[in-house]
Each structure stands twice: as structure tokens, then as C-alpha cells.
Image (cartoon, rainbow, N blue to C red; front, side, top):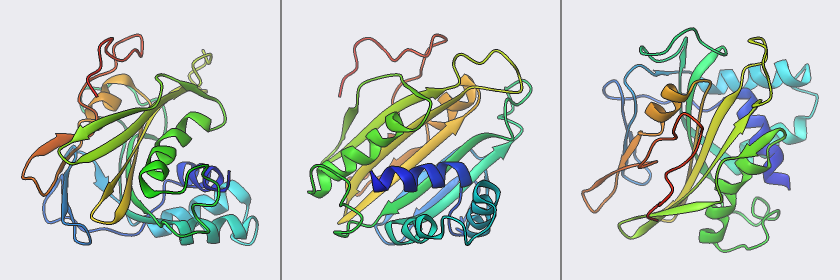
Length: 235
């Protein structure tokens, strides 16, 4: 799937355009009117530079795999990238360089970008975007694909773990959640990753305020110590 290759590149590079926030932990997305609140400890980065540097780190130069880089630019419009090198305050030693990362992006719903999806209507594509995290190399799915009703909107979400068999501190595991939603004619996506459970649960409490005036946490529950979701999930 073409989009999966793009997602792999974005996940590896953790890149996006530079975004400004009016105050720590608050971001307003002007194109849709959506307001997002995330942990104030996260630092917003100049991410276009990061994605270019990440591409070089992964492929050796911008010329190598340049078509994938171009496809990422055409199909994904990164809106905000924030991360926390070193972990959230309650955490112990970090398990990787960026202990928590939040990426907000828009998926461009063009014919080219939707080509790899089985169903082409935007709602189905949003669901497909969330499910791609389950298809990343080395991913262990933690749940079937889910959705949550946020007023008139439907948020699609999926959860995966990586490196669960690793026992060496040099090969840490990681948790990733991918969420996507149609909103005001746009397909918005969130990629949330962390190397430690507490950091991940804090990160997934990132919330969005929609035009019904209500605020919704992207993930309205925590994973437990065994990386299990609540048994009775209300969708």
C-alpha cells in the first residue's frame, strides 16, 4: 500500500511543518477551526527540517528514495509536531531518544493518495489511515480497529506495540496509536508514540475541541500494565 510506505517514512522521520502555538500545550488549527490541547511538557519543533534530516538518516541522502519523499509531501500535510526528549516528568530513564511524540497531519484526499485504499470514500479512508499502524513492520496489534463517536464526528483509532520480545535496553519497545477523523471537509490524523506506558497514556489524553463546543480526549481510556484496553469499550 502506497500510503503505508508514506506512514513508515513519517514515523521514522517524525517530521512536519513548523507550527506555532499561542500558549504552551494549546494549538488552533485555522483551516478547520479545531483546537487541540496536549501535554505542556511537549516541545513544538521545526519539523520540516526534521523530516528532511530524518530522510537523510534513513536513506543516506534526499536523492535516495526521493519518490517516497515527494509522495509524503503530496499526500500528507503535517500540521504540528511536538515531542519530549527524555520522557514525561513522572517517568524513569527514557527508553529512546524521543520518549513521547505527537504528530498532527492532514491526509490529502486526492485520487492519487487514496489509490492504495480498498474503499475510496473519505470516511472509509479515515478508518484505513488509523489501521495502517497495525501494518507497520514489527507491529503487534493491541486491539481491533475502533471508533469513537465525538458528537457528529467519528474518530477512528488503532493501537500497536513494537519490540515486545526485546529484553535489551538497547532495543526498547514502543507504543503507537493512530487516529483519524473527517472534519469540515478535511481528513485529520494523529500519530502518538511513546517508549513508556505512563508517557503513552498521558499523550493519548491529548484533547480536541470541536464545533459543538465539547472537548474530547483522543483516547478516552488508559492501557493497563499488560497493555490491554478496557474489556468493555463503549464506541
